[in-house]
Image (cartoon, rainbow, N blue to C red; front, side):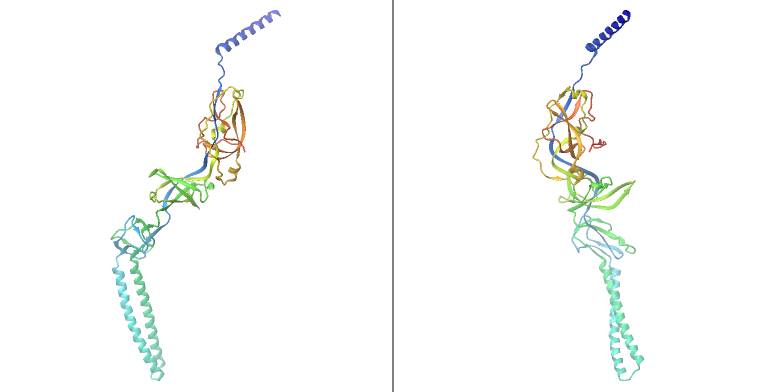
Length: 410
């Protein structure tokens, strides 16, 4: 029995010695966690939808011809400023003038015949009343008179048609505007047998342009009329142009199983920088709020570890990004879910104690988040941790807009 006690004592002494050796020579002291903190701030936040589109004039008119012939005169060119009723071009009029002259001669003959038949009918009527001629002779004279009248009417109509075709050889501008495109040259033959050929394309007013943007079906539910839009073009990368959504066309476009909807955006072009056909990179602001209380998205992803809760931590100075302006009641959010907010949780520092707070958040642009309730401008918000037994689920940088969002409790 004593032998077993001696063995137990020896083993205990050895284990104790090993424990002491590990404690004093090999054990690493616990690493204190380092927290980064930040104050909420007031600022502007918005959610957006991006798309690409093409710049076009608001109103264009295709000018054609209703008669065939070859182009003899051309009075305007590309980019020419034109007025309504201005002569743009003229087809050769030789054949059309010949038709007018021909029917004019036929009309003169028809009028002469009508004059003769009128006088003849008068004589035949007088003879018929005195019984000098038969009823058949009288009816024949009446028929000849009516035929002469009908012939005059027919030739008059033919002459009118010939003169109209002659007028059609002159191509006039239907509106005030600028010539965007010219499809013909002097000497070219244009044929109007089957459809009206387009000779010119005229833009009514290029100081007002529109962007025809293709919005993905996943985003079209957030887009509505009159939303604010900004866009850039490759020709002026430093310039940002403004516009408004005018309409969303219901006819979808399908390409490679991708469904998009054409969204028309009105834009001013007073500086004449925008040109038809330019590609526009469009940003549509679906919701906006001015002077909102904002926090970084990474604050939602922070979780403290056991060492942090036992006060084994170091607090870095809190960051206050800017002086808070007075909040303004300029809420431009119409979505009910966004107005009521989403329930989330963050950690704040109260003295030397970590405290979890329940907040309601609104707009989220994947970098910063609007706080509707639960925080004040003076709350010291914990946004990240270094050291300790790491519990932060994200780096201290803001969340990437290309990464999927974490689920949030409501």
